[in-house]
Image (tube, rainbow, N blue to C red; front, side, top):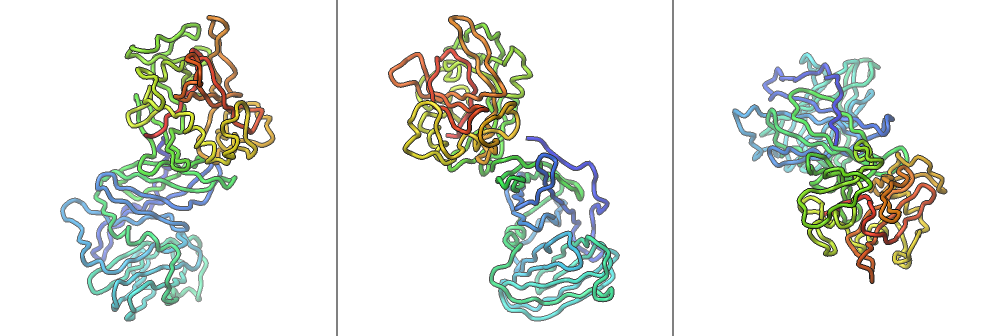
Length: 456
């Protein structure tokens, strides 16, 4: 996982309202896929320090945080209304704001420009429920909209994206209607209980579709201390809820939720590299031994390491064993590989066939979008599953002599299941650049193949 924070800090700064409001910071989010802008679907925001979370839904991609300094606690007992962030935000000429009242209440909406001048106002007694308002801007860039009720007062900041003057330069707020389902209002009850103190650690998970309309996500962690802009670098796949990544042996591995399975998104790369001509010592040794293609550590960094099956299963040959995976994870079984294949569309009737199988582009749904150097299959990798299968090649045997085989064109992954009827072979899965199918086969245990871990 990489933290991607835009270097430019917006000139908005931390706004301390002249009207007695708590200090406020604004977190602004955008997303790119391989350097190209993509619109965000939603942003899941967790306060890791306080154990609370909230969600922003498109088109709202700005979180306004009235934060606590630690001197006083926030009192939510009388927050009997909820105010949404305006959407879209930033906006051009007009924008929508939603208000939810838990009971009938007299409210006043006041809109001021950034220096505190009142530019529009609405006041009325409204019934319990959702209420929608449209704001038509003047030529100011920033506006503060404050709703004042019987027990509480809440303020949001609205950003006007152009300088066009509407209504002859006079701002206007118009009551739209009482509505049952309000777009952009889904997260407001959660936002009201989203407690934030200065220097709290936050985690942001951004969700968006790639340019190929594949669901993707990215994760950023930060402890914001001022208004800040963030950029998600979207990759195919959705991370596992509550486990966007793990750290194992000093390395970070992202996760991918595929059906109800939680997979590591990268090939395992742990242990001490040994020469490709050597066989691993396998059981009973505390040191994990790995191969790197061409005996080059940089290839392990790019593709992950290659392991003999006995080393993968470390201390146990039982199907589904933890092996060299981190605690709480295990080497996938043959049946778990089949479950993954069915999740990407492989028919039940062919999952036990040997060799290359599949008729629904299953292989390309599992392949990483990049890294396949000579893809000649009928279609290009799309990684719609998020599995991100990379072509790490293999370490094979010619008699007792080991040699490396074709990274960039083949990816091969061990299962924890032995080949039925043979103590010297184990089952594995393969992908290749020349086909859209998935290979189900068995290999000699001293071969070196890639490893993926599956959550228990």
